[in-house]
Length: 248
Image (cartoon, rainbow, N blue to C red; front, top):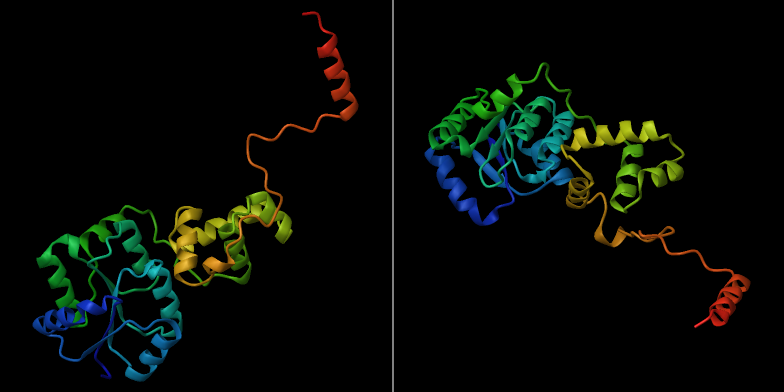
């Protein structure tokens, strides 16, 4: 299919429906795959598609980040993100464009807008859904595209996923609080997550960490409220004696 369209989707049960709809919209040379990472790179090298249609939830909430990473491997690749079943906010949809994706099509904009967008990208044009355009126009400047997660950032991600507090991470990695704060902001922006819970979800989905590797009790573990300090034995004897000698 050199010069055709490669569709990325994990919804294998819906492949027959996708083929029917794409054919109805005039796509004649296309293939659908659920492969990812190195296997996907191999397919792109072999098939040399003109257009890649990727489901916005292909990598769950980190699809925009992963498409940016794919474009660093294939800079000339024309990618269009399509949101059908995986409903994402327009702010998150904008990150596809910030990371180099040419088009973003959202079914929530309505069937006419959605199918019209697909026809435009089939014709080699660029299309961005009105909702995403609106959110992008509200910004004073374009956001910087996400880079690759560094080795240091991956160390921080692993520690965060294992429940380490900020102070504990600074102690383990021998870094300052300000340094950790900057790195966490970069990680969150890069992966389009807002908190540690969403970060754990992304890390597990992308297989950066496995459930078996999660260990929350590797350090001194003290819950609040704090336990009372042990009473000195001699003090305890005096206290007991005083109670016994107290008048009735």
